[in-house]
Length: 258
Image 1: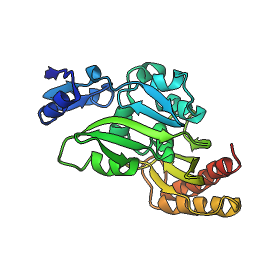
Image 2: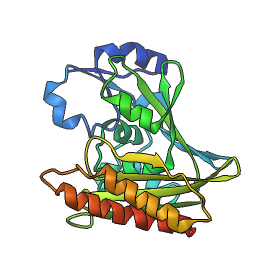
Image 3: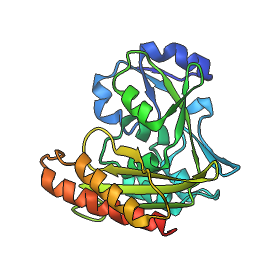
Image 4: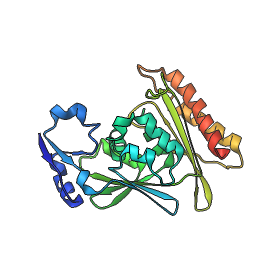
């Protein structure tokens, strides 16, 4: 295996056609005997967390444990999602970018991030995408790209709930909701996970003064989205029912103000 360690982003981009990016290595380790070339991103300065005007910017190489222990104003639910994502030793190695690029629908952290509705910056071109657009691109685009950073507005309230075979197991079904002030208006985002290649995310349309209507809408939407979500871990009927229940719980929590 060839090992490359670029020192600049431009150099890293020029090498992308020769191999695969190496961040924390969690996603690549099972494939290590199949890889010809890896491009180590550790020297690019893409780690770290900053807060400015209630916006969080996290570099793609930020370790999950950095999120857990950071002293900046991060939602407790986001820190907990990192703990659910992996044990301590793995969190010290795994990166935020690695989760965004490689994790599937059963990822607690990816589900919570989806509810935060972040923007991601890619190279080349400093292209800005929503997280849903990144999901559509990460497994399908023939053109190589590099994830640089993730940014999101601090929510007024963020909630997460899940059902799993054990407290630290991957969820059979999970849901997250976030309430954020944007342009002076309440913005409600919901995500459900536990199945497929990625969590499913949507904006919750409705009047915050009609909490019962919002809760009902979220529950029905989640149940419908997971109506065919059956696999070896759970039946579609079970996932659909529990998705509706968990969506109801998290939306009730954020509407009530956590």
